[in-house]
Amino acid sequence: MGSEKKLVIGMFGFGVVGEGLYKVLKQTPSLKASIKRVCIKNVDKKRNAPSALFTSDKNDILLDPEINVVVEVINDSIAGYEIVTTALRNGKDVVSASKKMLAEHLPELIDLQETTGRSLLYEASACASIPVIRNLEEYYDNDLLHAIKAIVNGSTNFILTKMFEEKLNFKEALLLAQQLGFAESDPILDIEGFDAANKWVLLLTHSYGINITIDELLFNGITQIDASDAKVAESKNQSIKLVAQAKKLHNGKVATFLLPQFVDQNDQLYFVKNEYNGVVIESGFADKQFFYGKGAGSFPTASAVLSDIAALRYGYKYEYKKLYQHAPAELSDDFHLRVYISFEDLATIPKEAFTSIEEWHSGNERSYLIGTLPYSNLKASDWWKNNRTSLILMPNSIVEDNEINELKRLSLSLAGLEL
Ligand code: HSE
Image (cartoon, rainbow, N blue to C red; front, side):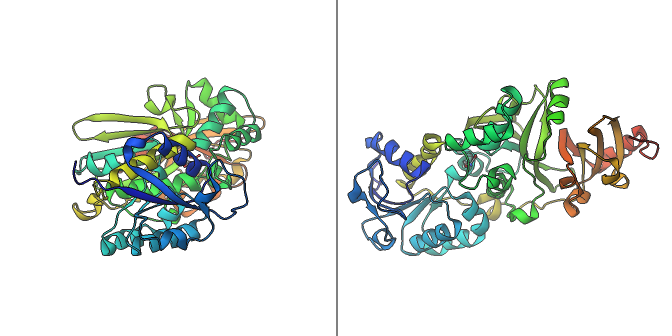
């Protein structure tokens, strides 16, 4: 291919992903890409690479005319934004894995690609090794995407697997996720769902042309899941996973949220364990397709960065087809969710919010109920995040308006329930 260009890379960051990429590139000589400089904060720290490679001056990369690709794999989203925007303006293509930075600035970054004519690729920023963004862009380049659901955070999936299958406690499991390099440097971002929410913001844009901030997304992490919830899951042969999902409703709009969910054994996501991620896509004619791969860790993430770098050889750019070549989808508030809620005190649960209740179990320390309530109630309030309440979606949790009357007919009356 005569049009392949030689890539000279300047990299920002030499942490789990940066060092991984350095090693991976050394093992991929056929790519004709080499790292010229690596910019890091602390040049005195001992690194597994020749010291001449490193600099702490960002301009050694950003102003070097020979460097035509900037790889940005740092933790700081403010500095990351500065680096990525400057690099694009200076005529360099960019590969980034900074999901938080990307989710916070996507519209400006899309505009900047347009005005500079440069390419910004970020496959590693969602589901690490799974090539989901490029597939959503290129393969699902039509409006037949009925639904997409995914496990997008490796650490939380790892923690849930270790807790419920290997009986580690939360702290032990988190520590292990940190030691293995899966967790964010601030693990709150993982366990409270922020990291997954950032990734989901990116995937929503590439799935449906919907661009939101995480403040507009209904999401939670895994910190409220109680040991008693795991027992309920086990008794039903289910597991609990943190699942992001979006689905086209009958009204043509899209429902989306990211919450813990009971997952049946006949669901592909059931078998996604440890730091693996999984994406299930439902499309018009193909029915279900399943993508599976490591969602965190040095080499799996570096492999996605490597693939983006390789794509730059032939000038690949995201075209944001769902935003620009189709009418972007709209979000809907007009649906209900089937949920399981466990709690200590019934008085803390707004019973009037429920459209229907189908199961009720009273226990000594915790009780639980299964019922349906409007998505808009959860979106507008946070009672379900307080008072040691745990909210977990039921499988197939979306209930559309046409199904509500039947549920109401079958509903138990909460008025008569007592602890
Ligand atoms: N902390 C992230 C995760 C790393 O656990 O998924 C990969 O993005």
